[in-house]
Amino acid sequence: MKSVALNAFPRTLVRRGGVKKLRASGRIPAVVYGRQRQSQNLELNAKELENLIHHSASENILVDLAVQDDPTPTRLALVQEVQHHPLSGRVLHVDLHEVAADEPVVVSVPVETTGESKGVKTGGGILSHVLYKVKVRALPKDLPEQILVDITELDVNQVIHLGDLPAPAGVEILGEKSLTVLAVTVPRAEVEAATEEAPADAGAVEMLKEKKEEGEGGEAAPAKAAEKKDEKKDEKKDEKKAEKK
Image (cartoon, rainbow, N blue to C red; front, top):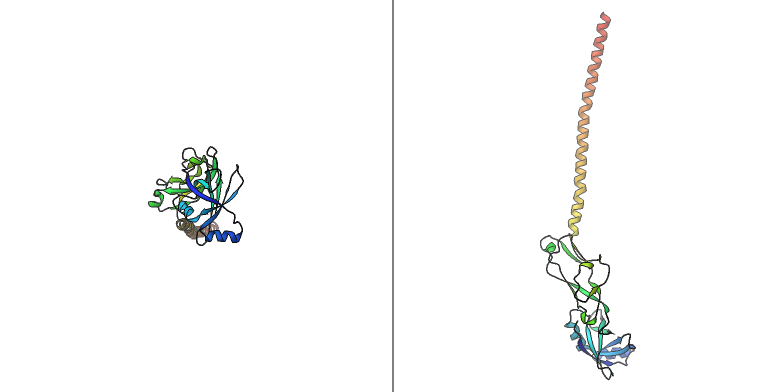
């Protein structure tokens, strides 16, 4: 990840009223922290920051932070968290994490897709994006802005797990490798329809079987009764012949 310049100014207004005035003047409250220094309250130019975020693929931005009147000309820092207004979306506050160029850091990066899944295009499936961000570990210069996944060959009932994601050079993707990130599934309506049809067909087969058995039983019963009646007639004839003799 290439670092970009960001100017900052020491901030003295910290209470609610002061921060409100700060935002009204076109500045955004921020804080920078790290292991080597104490945290410091800063203020950023709102237009400069919004322009920086607008031209980045994600809010994971590596900056060369230049604080006015600071003895250190620039500090390498990551934009760690950006707080937005829930309605207007404007930036309310920024957390900056000072990092060392030669020490790995862990950040969450977004997972984005490229291509059109053949399971969606020709198989009637639905693409499920289960995991939108993954944690990665890398040196600041190697940090990716996003993890890009080609889903062109992803078919119906196929899954891309965390362990299948392509890791850029120098980047380690963290987490359980069996976690589902992307999947193409059959629409729920089709699954429910197939489930409902199966018991109905089975019931029809059972009913036909029962009717058949009843029919077979109904034909056998009269035949057996007729056989017994003929046997009794034969017995009576034999008895009469014996009496005559």
